[in-house]
Figure 1 (cartoon, helix red, strand yellow):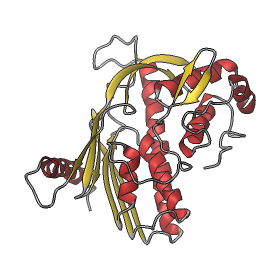
Figure 2 (cartoon, helix red, strand yellow):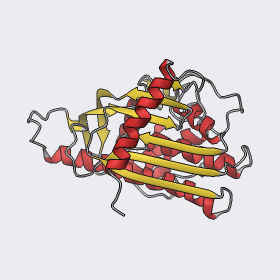
Figure 3 (cartoon, rainbow, N blue to C red):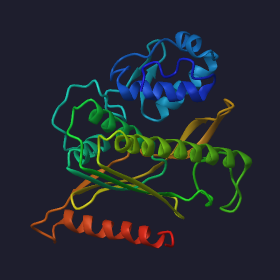
Figure 4 (cartoon, one colour):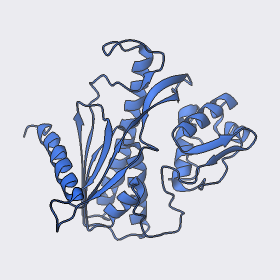
Amino acid sequence: MSAERGAGAGKGSSSLLEALRGRIAEGSYAPGSHLPPQRALAEEFDVSRDTVQKVLGELKSEGWIDSKQGSGSWVVDEPPIHSLIQPPTAPRLRAALGPFIARAFGQPVVQLDVFTFTSESLDAHIRLQSERIRLREIRPPERIELRMLLPDDSIDLPYPRARRSAGGPGETSDIDHRLQDRMRDITRRHTASLRAALRDLGTEGLVPSVRVDVRRIPLAPPFKLYLMRDVEALFGPYRVVERSILLDDETEIQALDVLGLGSTLTRHVNDPGDPNSTGSVFMESWQAWYDSWWTILEPPS
C-alpha cells in the first residue's frame, strides 16, 4: 500500500478515513507520532476542516489515535495494526490478532477459521503478511486455507443503530438502515481485499495452493473467534459502545455499535499431550461449533 494512498483518491470523508487508517497500518504514521495538522489534511484531501475533525473523531473512537486540544492528534502507542516498519522481534505471546496471524503464517500450512463482524482488522493483518511474503521476510507457506463465517446480509442486526432509536426489535429507522448498509459495505470491501491479497499470492506463484471460502451465518456476532486449526485460538467478546459514526454524506450519527478494538482477547493453546487440558477442551469444542455451522451452510453439490 502506498503512503500516498489518499492523494487523488477522491473527495470526502470516506477517502480521508481510509487513507489515514492505511498510513497508520503501514507505519507511515508510526506509534507515538503526530498526524499532520488539520489544515494540511484538509488541503491535501480537498475537504473542509469540519470533515477532518469528524474523521479524526472516528479514528479516536476506533482506537487508532488520541488527541488533546492544543496538542493535535497522535497515533496511540499500540494501534490496532502492527506496522511493517517496526523492527522484527519474536512474536509476543499476549493475546492480540497481529502476532496470532504472524504465527499462523509461520506454519508450513496456514489453516484459519474465522467468525467475525466485518473482517476489517483481519484484512489489514492478512495484507501485512502477504507483503512480508513478497518481501521475502518470511518463508512462503506451502498452502493457505481460510474459511470465514460472516453475518448474513438479510438479517436485521441489533447494531449499529442510532442512539436515539427507541423502537422495538422489529422497528428499524431509515438512519439505522443507512448505518447497517455502511457496515455491510465495509465488510464487503475488506472481505474482497483480503481475498484478493491471498489469491494474488497464488496467481503470482508465491504460494502453490490458496483457498478462501466465505459463508454467511444468520447470527449477529456477540464475539469474534479465530481458530488456527489444531494449534491455538483467539476468542473475544464485542463491546457495545456509544460512538460517533460518519456517513458518506458527512452526516454524523451518535450510534450504538460494537467495537472489537480494545476488547479482551483470550488465547487458548491445544495441548496434544493432554486432551483434558483447558486449552485442548476449548479448541475441540469451538472447532466443533465452527465446523457444525460450516457444514450446515454448505452449498448443495
